[in-house]
Image (tube, rainbow, N blue to C red; front, side, top):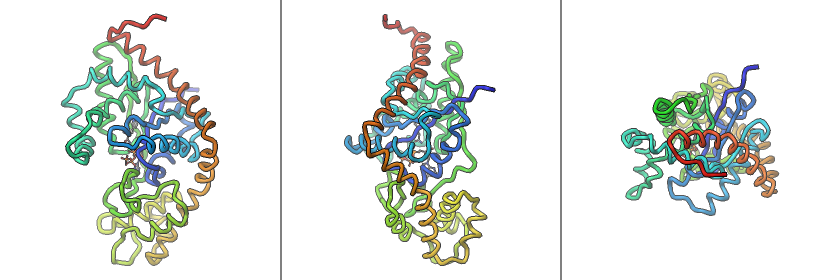
Length: 334
Ligand code: ATP
Ligand code: LTN
């Protein structure tokens, strides 16, 4: 049997996971976990590129880790770990910084978008964010990186850095490819349906968290922005709110948009919203039960994290040592 390809993806503990993260990424990870040699990483160091409350970041890192397991990622099949637990990520990042150009980083659109929101004091780490991401990916000789379209530019940069290094020295890194699942839904904000649902949104009504109780989900859907036409049909341009709810319904029921629309057309907006809420609640019920079970024993969760970090580190260190040697660092004696 051919060896499985390596796959890496990361997710920031910058807020509670939303149904956008779930339908757009996590659900797909669960599906593909048996087909590849998968590494899934809670990227806590990336979350620090914008201000974070220390206690909240600590709590959310534990919660996000538990939520990935509760969503169906297997600890046996995948390597599930926290970025800061494997120091090789920061170490390789420094070395890659020595092979990355300012011009390349200043072209990144995510940096331009995120830095505007930070006002006067933009952290240097926000500018350097893509180099840490490149280190994440390259440490594991990754073939495939499942991410949303918004990360395409970062994947291209990773490929450029890896190719440059391989040419300057000798083949060291696998050149990774972005993996953009066609079925991956893009879920929009419930309050501003023309922008993406985001876990770090300051308006709690804009997203549905995987932790939300059924009555909260119903309430948030009731408040979801729609239009005055009172007809449930898919039209992204003129009816972004309703189209987003149809998309959510389709994702929750594992249907395509056409079939989802057929099921709900003719309903009043109020009934339609209730139907969407019920479908989400049904999806989240088993996940929330498993999440509660996992969170009831932090010591076990910490043990899982340690096993994941040890497993990741064994691979990561091999790549890091090669790079250190090639660039001319003297090995530390044993
Ligand atoms: P933040 O608010 O901190 O920017 P985010 O909610 O946008 O976070 P990320 O951590 O940037 O999420 O992304 C994690 C994964 O979830 C990525 O693969 C991304 O493509 C996916 N994702 C995030 N938001 C959505 C969404 N609204 N719809 C579909 N997929 C999403
Ligand atoms: N930048 C990504 C998160 C991320 C990532 C990674 C994704 C950090 N490191 C490595 C894939 C591979 C995001 O914001 N979605």
